[in-house]
Length: 248
Ligand SMILES: NC(=O)c1ccc[n+]([C@@H]2O[C@H](COP(=O)([O-])OP(=O)(O)OC[C@H]3O[C@@H](n4cnc5c(N)ncnc54)[C@H](OP(=O)(O)O)[C@@H]3O)[C@@H](O)[C@H]2O)c1
Image: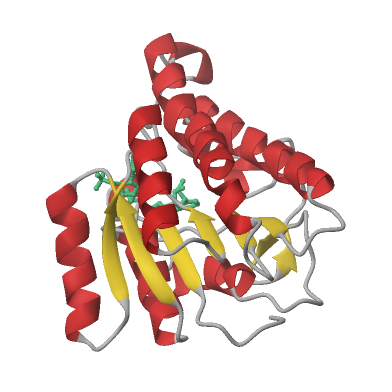
């Protein structure tokens, strides 16, 4: 980072799962954290837990699918802080039923998934971009998934080639679109101090997968934290897991 001012991070979906752990790890690294979520009580409780441990954390009500909520949150951060240094687009849902054939997932599930996992990311980023532009070294982290990797999905021997992972076509397509958005935004912001990167957290035990997964949240948050704390010499426009490139 190019100045010594305390940094301010906003993590969406920070009341539980990977987001809450990302907020904790960033706060432990000395970053002031805004824990954003759609449920006021849940984000207030999550922020209070961090504060109890002596960390700098505040709740922020933000439903990524509600433009009025996104606008109000951006206005509040502008009024109180005047800038933002790190945006972690972490909020996400998995509403498709495991075990269904891809063609059998209802259109309503596709729309719900895209509203949160793609349009939510784009809208939140657009709303906070003016504040990120005021930071000397802003970082945007888009929490994608290995399921967004078309290379992985099209490899019959890959981790994703199981009936379970192939039953989430909308989730996977939305994450592929997040990867594409990441590349487009990185292109737009080339030549600025803002770095934009997508990450795969790893298959992590959370509510999203009913507690399945190989990793606990402290490992699952690692990839986001790494990209949130990138130095000025770090990359932009990448898709990584723990700093290692994931094939698009
Ligand atoms: N777990 C994995 O194995 C895995 C693997 C790859 C990628 N990911 C990605 O990692 C991210 C975090 O997932 P997780 O596993 O930690 O899931 P999680 O435990 O289910 O947490 C999801 C978070 O997103 C929030 N959220 C959902 N819709 C929202 C909305 N409209 N506005 C604001 N917040 C909203 C949830 O809030 P509520 O409590 O209000 O529902 C919750 O805080 C997601 O983007 C997911 O796709 C996870």
